[in-house]
Image 1: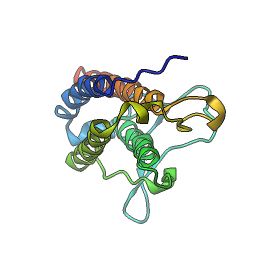
Image 2: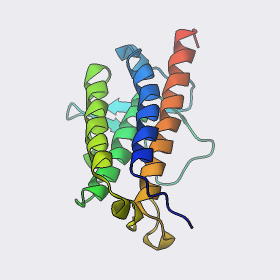
Image 3: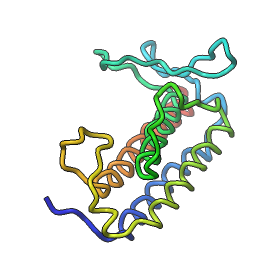
Length: 175
C-alpha cells in the first residue's frame, strides 16, 4: 500500500475541512446544540456534578439514534483528543474523561483549541513521521500509518461537519 508522504497535503486538506466546520460553528445558537431532531436521538445530558454526559452504547444500536449537535461536538472532541494524544505519544484519554463544555461559545472555543493543536501537529510532521506505524483508531496489526490517521481525522471531521450543518439547516427550516 502506498503511503502519501507530502506533509503539505494533509494540512491543505485539513484547512479545507476546517473551513466547513467553522462555517457551521459560527452560525450556531446555543439552543441549536440540544435540539432533538427525532424521538430516537443521542444527546448530552446534564449530570449531577454539573457537567454533561453523552448518551452511549458499547455496541451500535439498531436503529442508530440520530445525534444532536451537542453529541456530535462532544464526539468530535473525544476522537480528536485521542488522535492528538496518539500523535503526541501521550496516554490516550478515556471516553469518560473527555468533558463537553456545554451548549454555545464554550464548545466552539474548545473545538477551536483542538483545531490549533492539530494544526501545530500537522505543521511539524515530516515525511518520516507520516510513514510511521499508527494503531489509532484501528487495531495495531492493521499495518496503517500516521498518514492514514491524519487522513482519517480529516475525513471524520468532514463527516461530522456535514452532520452538524444538516442538523443546523433542518432546525432553521423548522424541522
